[in-house]
View 1 (spheres, rainbow, N blue to C red):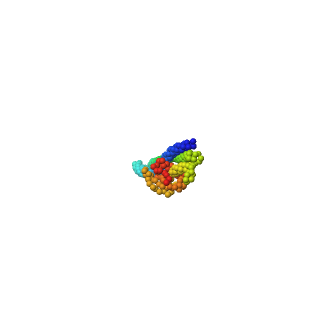
View 2 (view 1 turned 90 degrees about the vertical axis):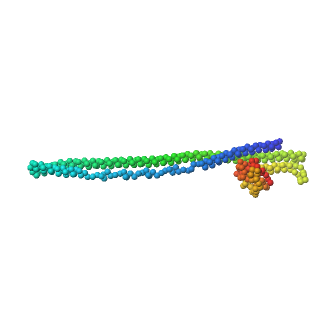
View 3 (view 1 turned 60 degrees about the vertical axis):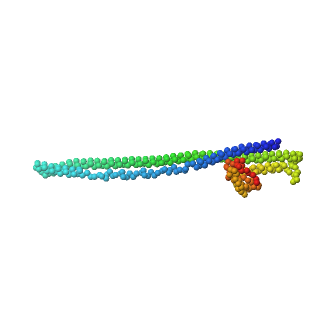
Length: 347
């Protein structure tokens, strides 16, 4: 019964190893996919922008309006027409008075009085005209002043509106670009976080599958050892009539059980050591040939003798197809020789 149980253990171990291997491949594919997507996202990520690089100097919109200003009082002049009219009228009045005096034979005193009365009347008319002209000129100048002031105020208002609107449009453009950049950045960061989580999940799954595979190999080794014990015990009983585990010979007693177990253990040690193909674990490496597919074949020794003593034949993990390579718990490369056309063996 022990033999059948051991055989069942071997079969179960290989089944666990195959399942772990499938899981390891699946997680490795997920990890590589996440890595590729992260690299692509990082490569195509938007460039950092300056949202204010489109701002321009609006000072050119401010115009010098002093050229539009003038002094409406600069052209004011003294009205001489009234004075000239007054002189002319005075002369005419005097001439008329003299003519009248000659015709009537009046005295000089009457002529003088008439002339003075006429002159006084004309002076009043002349003064009234002059006052009207001065008032009109003042009103015209004041209206021109108010018109220029109103025009200047309107020009300043329109200029300020243009400058403020230009500033508002530039600020709105900058804020819009900043919002768009930040929105895309948040989206990229969210996706990057998701991909990192996917990568870490796949990495942990790959590591877990690798441990399951290692445990399965350990189960296989233990079961094979059990087969050796069972076979060795049966052979010993057959040869000794059930009296022990060996028979005497010329060179002494032979322990069939121990010999069978030792050979099986050595075979399992070779199986486990063969998977450890990281170049960092090896020394005295010597190239001895190539496989049919062109893989380099080496002779080497393990630095740490726990992986095996003596010289071995095999490959370097960094030179074989990566689908045949996985990582162990310590981060060293392991090679699945079933995917290669190179035989791992101890020389």
